[in-house]
Length: 246
Picture: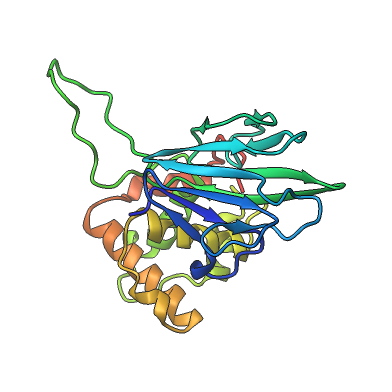
């Protein structure tokens, strides 16, 4: 799996994303680029900056002469870092990031995902040596896990033969604990889950409706087969998460 994924502004399809493997570097700016990110705005420098992927984080270089860039954590209730003009290789640790560039009175933004973030158990039981990395790195405090729990809820409650919830139903189920939830945010999280759980890309080649349904079926099948979501996880659908997220 690619280490870092850059999501352009108004990205409408997975093919528009820029995927970077560990050690690879791309530029972003006003100049058109076949393998980088083009930001077509007169207030953006021709070469505004660079992004380099390094496993579960990435480096941002600000090649602007006089503009500070801000990298926001959409899940961090205001958490952000500033990258000053000329700063090279500033490390960005967020799993989800939004890079904000000032541009002649406007603010332009694009997203960067680092889906290879992993988590290990803190329980050592007096054992020495390296910890065992989990097969699936999921953070139960994130919105994407709430979407996965809502998808799995009918199956976990014994409704084995009913269709999986439609996106509109997921929005209504999530709204009590996520007041700003929308269809687009649910779609976004389904796409991100498919990426994070390394599902095969087959459903992406189908028609849009079939593509989403195929992803939902694959996600639920994988999650229930390996106990990634359990019945007690459904409690999170009735308790507001600690973080404010997209």
